[in-house]
Length: 271
Image 1 (tube, rainbow, N blue to C red):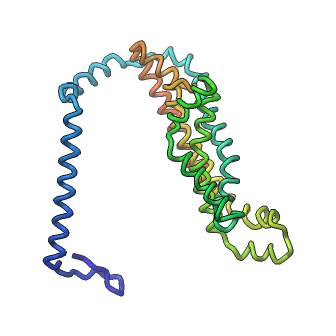
Image 2 (cartoon, rainbow, N blue to C red; image 1 turned 135 degrees about the horizontal axis):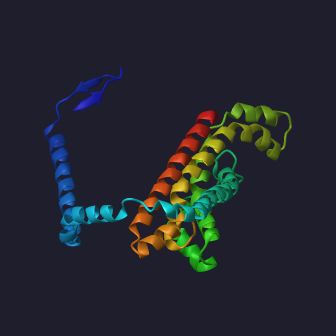
Image 3 (cartoon, rainbow, N blue to C red; image 1 turned 180 degrees about the horizontal axis):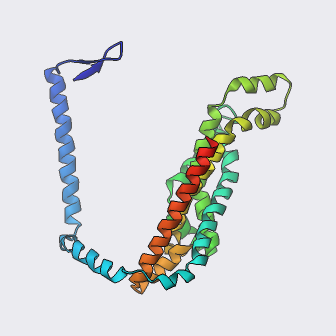
């Protein structure tokens, strides 16, 4: 069993009988849990469909190729809606996440007993629910369409952005804050001139990174009626128009690749 010495080198020691017994008991418990879980999964699985999956996949591939290239003229508006959902959702999320992050950060929160727990609750609650579930809830409240998708993406992104931003706030150089405070600056002036300039690179990086993620998430929101290219995908799947499905998947792949390239370039310029 390797153990790190004081100088950082690994030193091997023989396990005692008790340590070996605990080690093997842990492995046996893990194996038992795996066997139990596999048994439950097997009972709930129709294995005939699993063994027949290669044939079904081959049949769908034959039906989906070649893609129906002339259908691409009808995908311009849906992919534009998808980009708008991701972009507007990200912008709204950033506007909401910045004040939440300042309330959650230990060095900027006005109250560690009231404001900070409330801000952390907002961060956890918005991050714990998937955007598809938010979209389903919002469609029931405000109806289907692009607006429901924008709000779903925004709510889902608030917690993600706020968490990374408040961590950046807590890691700032406090000497700059102390220097500005010593000049008699107010609390707001300290934030504007001492904290915000230090977190701007992190804020820009978070914005681009989250926008890249939201491009991926917004492509499937249409499956539940929240607009975008996912709506075209759902319509094509409903009528088993496999050539259209393959074309839509190619367009989604192209959009994701382009967004990844753009976000990588922007992050590289920021860093």
